[in-house]
Image (cartoon, rainbow, N blue to C red; front, side, top):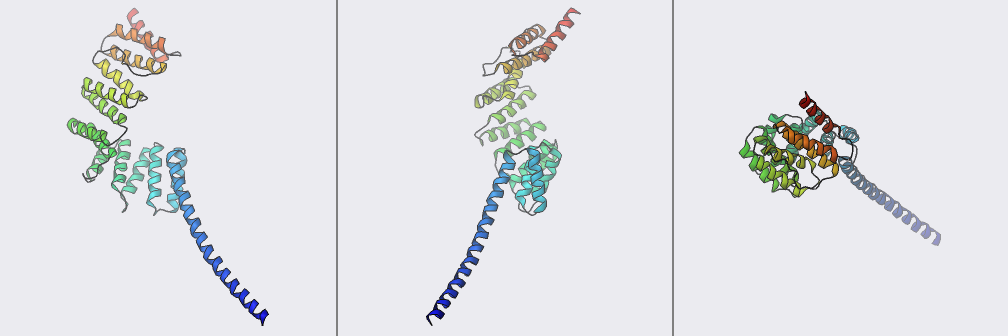
Length: 285
């Protein structure tokens, strides 16, 4: 009898353990599913930030092909194509994302951005016009400003640039774009102020430094601005200033600036040396 009771207890225990095993097995499966989702999310983030752009494209093409219903994978593919500078494919991929029932206004802004990168300004404007005016973002207004610039709607462009600057903590790039807009309109003093502001915000922005020199040169101010530069950058800025002077007929000043550029550059400055040789040959002829 005692033996029978022991066997019964063992049987019940075994059954209980079996039930626990089944339950814990289910829990483990669920836990691993959760881990897989986290791992995939991390991998997606890595692919969109630090991976080689074309490798990221291949990854998201494969993933979205296997699970076409998942919008985040289609987004990943579209973003990767933009990073890879495959603009035609990127515009097509963002069109697919923007037309998805769960697409957001951010997606439509990214679609407009892809169209601008593909030089399709008219369609980009149409996409932006369909976004409700209540949706406000830095990227939306930056693109609106660029479209207004392309249409030479200067007052609208100024308004959009100003709004965009107020929506970001890193306005240097927008200030540089706005300054270039002023430069193309012939507002050289306004452009100079914006390029100076851009450099104040980001001292590493060489494009703004080069544009600042162009704005000063257009006003026949051929002195170098007081900005932080490396030796190579300073030589390149002197070269830009020299070309600006020569273009406006101030050849003697241009030649002097070319010599300064050649002397300043830490290596042989081929472009400046070639320009100076051509000028001197023309004078001798």
